[in-house]
Length: 432
Image 1 (cartoon, rainbow, N blue to C red):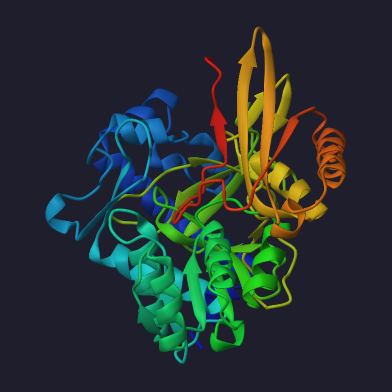
Image 2 (image 1 turned 135 degrees about the vertical axis):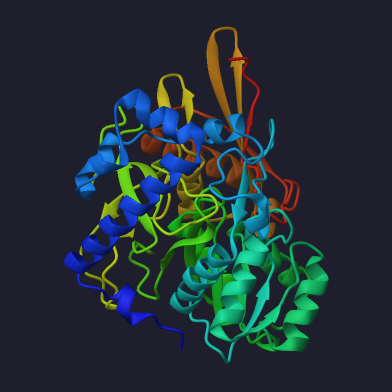
């Protein structure tokens, strides 16, 4: 088993000393090599010498995705392109992508944190891991690939899509670890059921799922249908890619690899730091990145952090599963609504498939929310009275849980679009 016990189980006081030493170095690095950061620091009257404790992190400016776009493509790099051995870019749907660069040592660091991630998820040198994240500019495929090779596992670099072939090779090659988005894992399960294969023909044991928020109920659905242990992983290209944090088999939150990433939780409105146990926006400062370090990067992801000890022995703080994003949050008639909240309600009810679409519109001056939900095959053939009862049940549960009324539209099985990558859950037609 790949296990970096020295760092993953480090005494908290020792860890803080290491973090401070690395923070000082990274602040100096960006101040003297990135004009954007030097200008930001000077506007706040801050210099590298002012960082004397971890609390001084709060003196430093935030970095946003817009800052990265404004410095497109290479304005945030701290080294010349001759030292950059890999370039990735975000899969942003609007405007220019955010570009990230890696030195050779950055690639080594990335492989290290992903080896830890995969080990948390049950991967060993005896594993056969099928990677169904996209390869290319997206950080998922190649990131997981390098981590798997560091562990010593046998890697099947399938990339996303070609679902029937995925399942054929899964069976023929004896895949026991699957890495992909959770929504694609469900699509694989659905395709497997349609093909009427005996699940026992597969050797799958573990799933490494990330790149999109997913609920606890969705985990249960995946585990039941694929008969695996599914763990949540977390990362984003702006920080390093996948490998920032991972659940262990205890599944009580995701361990943040704090020797490489310094985490904070802030109030997304005021920017004020929040204590452990408070829900807010995740912010990360990279401590060891060479080519493209970031200072206090605002992820827009909503989570809670805890420093309570974990049964696995790792001492790094844990974050809850991402509850949504501040930029995915919909404000409908004054109520904050996250897609994952709707998903949790729908999966709790049962009798429906875990596929849904939220359509937000504005009629006159009033916002409307329509939730399209796929019926299970058994319910689709049910009597009209049963469907009306189910519709009322969903509407009532959404109203009581989210505090908002919604139109519920039950649609036939397999009618909503499927995704081989990140699932699209929201269509907002409002002109705001």
